[in-house]
View 1 (cartoon, rainbow, N blue to C red):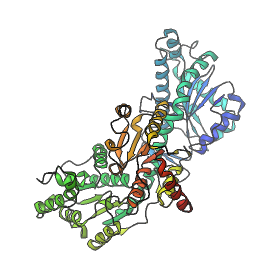
View 2 (view 1 turned 45 degrees about the vertical axis):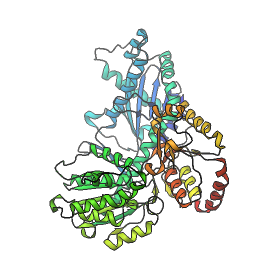
View 3 (view 1 turned 90 degrees about the vertical axis):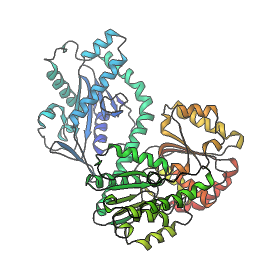
View 4 (view 1 turned 120 degrees about the horizontal axis):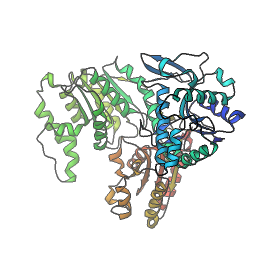
Length: 577
């Protein structure tokens, strides 16, 4: 029995081939075959996945990983090349990885049975093994001590009944264990009842976790993998001293900036990575803590304002009305005056700017001229930005570009246009509501109906928002994966201070203004409390807010906004292409 038996989307051709083999080959009908079983109790990672778990009466319990495409082992690294030509390398072999996976499932099951001594003893004696299916390998390879021949299924082996491979796994696993102290030939083979019980233990987690938690984690990991494919552009940076890289939301600009920071610091250079937003600055700072950085160098990662503040004696004003002028003019000017004769050895070798659309002003450029060897005109720098849609702090981003061009010559690249963050449905919603060009998106096949728009009356908005959060709770999605976004400060929204909402916040729910969340993202985003949606500033904020959602998007707008949204959708529909 194959569980589930109606899957149409697969991570690889090889996985599809083996799935169909189990589904249509009569030699496995007496077994339970679980596809993509998720276990949150993996001993090596916070979460783990295996391609197939086979529960075979009179044989044993076996995990199988599928590897399809080009495979090589170089200097101990296992490298895999997919159909798109992308190669990824890992230190751990697929045999060791599957051994760890099956052991984690074994420990999880034994933990479930710890209060039943008889069953715990029974399942501790049963054989748990693993194998690897190299579905594109046409000749057998001796993997040496890393993997046994009986663990391997090749392309030729797929021509035989799949039950013969499971029998080979069983025979090899029993032979390998027969001299171990715990092995008992009379107890090592599971009965049909043992298999039914194991399925019952695993199926509860399987039905709940795979449909929600596993999907979310897997998709988040895919987003990061797709984004890293764009790192190839950074190779061109090596041959150009000054570069501007533009891209819309979700195209991986921040990850590219971090990767460039890592590479340049490892070259022994003195590097700074600046951004505008405080929350993004904290994220960047925390991300670089795991990098192997030369501490003797004058490296920095965070907001430009925090960098300026630590190098001046200027006190931040208490009144909000003076705050913008303080950060935009007073603080950079004070820094310039205190550091205009900065020694060359204290200056930066390389400058990286994220959110460049917010940091290209005459005042900030004077700061960069002060701290960078050669200044903006002759120094080495890379700027990342979205001058079309995310310039929510500057009214005229085109003027910023002119200021930069007047200061320096630099290389520009074709804008990044592959959205790695949002699902197709979320990107589509952004185009319909803000008029931005529909981007290319990576093949996120999950959650195509993951955008929900609601237009309750003012008096019902709080209850509608609460019901969304209750539904997320029922689906057992961790609240740290959910962010509420509004153009207003949380205390000024219609749920500010509500004790029920505060209860969700205590459980991990995130809240933020859209302005402060620019440059960040979360799995689920709920946008709410817009007074209007048609002005240029609100359109920019809608664009930024919608593009923060990786997998699910909710919009809770007042009933009075429904006609305006309908008008926007009608006007922007042709832009879907």
